[in-house]
Figure 1: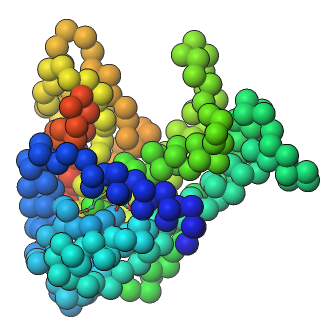
Figure 2: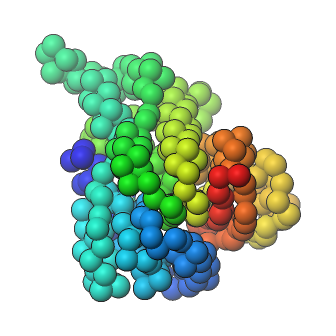
Length: 301
Ligand SMILES: C[S@@+](CC[C@H](N)C(=O)[O-])C[C@H]1O[C@@H](n2cnc3c(N)ncnc32)[C@H](O)[C@@H]1O
């Protein structure tokens, strides 16, 4: 497993758990009710896989069949789950995307000349990385191999997909540090940011394609969008594109797409899965930061 990813996740999770969680109760209740239904509906004779198991904040492990396996690349996740739930579950610590090691190696190649190891100036390195990223083909090899070997009947994805893009940005920033990889000029298109967004879309798509082909029933919870504002925000009816579901005051709602434009419901349907249940809610993660969370239950049609 990539060392930088495990370090990055450990840091991100520590920061995540250190946040003020006073306003999280409605989100945690809905996420854990949804994932708990998945655990209760699972066939206990077959393995159950919990991706993005984390510290078990959203996962009611007391409802998990004995055959349940946690998957999280944060090296502290299993221990934290034990402390929270007194459950020492079998665990996989691999990168669920299979894409981070390649991304990190490519960022290093862009930042330093391979022959002299000298650092390129940040603008040249950013242009170079933007040029290299389209050739990367993310494939969650470890996840696909685990599924082929264990044939899980149920897979829960507990709020990890929305992190793929954020982690990719952090990995690139860590490679460029102390310089910034971003242009910082709103007047000009940032080629690296665009290339990384496209990489994130390919990564989310490849991850979902492996889940969709697994033959398992899927219970997916993920951030659909992040809204940075504290103005009025309500959920309108389900609509495509999803941005039409968010209603604010006078001004249009500015939302960051956590999944780089991937339409999860459309993708699962196209892969032949039946959507059994979908729900959404708003999660106030911090003052001025609200997430539109989507929960989807799907199974092979
Ligand atoms: C927002 S947290 C979800 C919290 C978790 N469901 C819980 O109940 O505590 C996302 C989790 O996904 C994990 N994660 C993110 N990207 C990952 C990856 N590429 N491979 C494996 N785990 C990943 C993180 O380490 C983190 O624990």
